[in-house]
Length: 232
Image 1 (cartoon, rainbow, N blue to C red):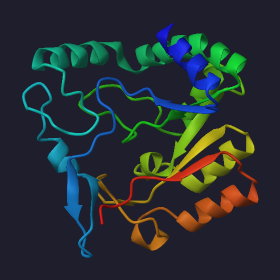
Image 2 (tube, one colour; image 1 turned 120 degrees about the vertical axis):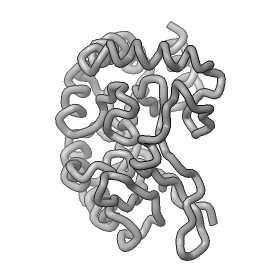
Image 3 (tube, rainbow, N blue to C red; image 1 turned 90 degrees about the vertical axis):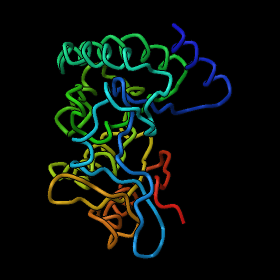
Image 4 (cartoon, rainbow, N blue to C red; image 1 turned 60 degrees about the vertical axis):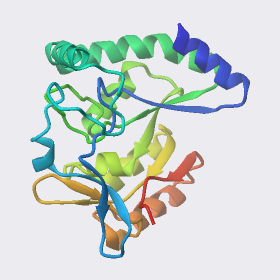
């Protein structure tokens, strides 16, 4: 009910698109916030070997998106609960959530834009479900509505090589399901790690020109932002 009321209040003041995510316990996950590039700038990275050394129930965590108000006991309990819930349990939670909020969003003419999981795979054994084309299709079909949309983040989905980013953008923009574009470049490494980079195609693994071209050719008129980038 609080969430529904927030949608109404946002709409009252002209908000047309609300972006949210459905990542339990931990938000976007990186292992280093200040990786230095040859030009002296710094960016966020996620190295799998570093991630494997982290134990949320043991370590004092100070990474972004990790609620510092959690005690060790709370993190341990939450992780156990979501591991027991599993992917299908999380899908049931999302179905319930959408069933409550989307009718309110429709009545307010607001588009709810779910952000992909970042990274788009399980972290610390906790389920993540907004990870790929198949799962995005499943999410959109949980509640078919003009208000049930995507925030398409090229960096979040793009750090999994199995995701064909240009193909997915073309599919969802033609279906009218992208309400917000987060355009970010990442450099994918052979072991599944990734580094956030400058936005030029030549700086990472994303074809940024092709992404922009698809949006223009399909007359995309939703919201766009260049996403993350570097500290200069």
